[in-house]
Length: 139
Image (cartoon, rainbow, N blue to C red; front, side, top):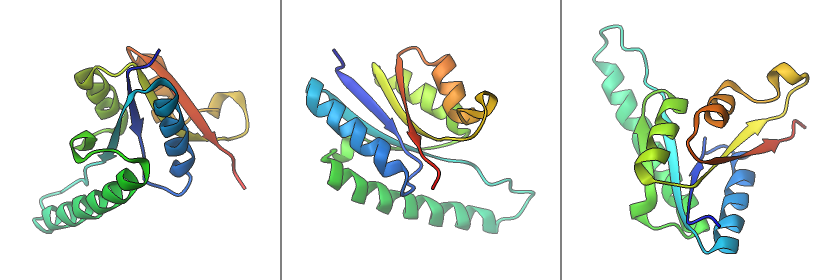
């Protein structure tokens, strides 16, 4: 059913739950699994040192992606880091890669209005493919 799955991860410990689900689905459907992390830009306000901070953050993310990719058996070609607004970059990358399922995590909250975070909600309502939202339970 699914041929290409995109795991959008925040690289948190909770995110490993969504990662495991994405790997299970990829195995079940013998689908390609791609990995995406989005780095939100730091407002610069004219500070040159911000570029150094962003580069350090990118390297930190890259190392974390490599580690997660090894655990999930995802090739280097299928690991992606984007910079921008998370919801926009996930939707754009899903379209560019022609995926048919996006897997994303969301923390559970109380009340229907905040069931999904704004990122998961935006992806769910704007994606051109199926979306699986994996809920992380608050402890």
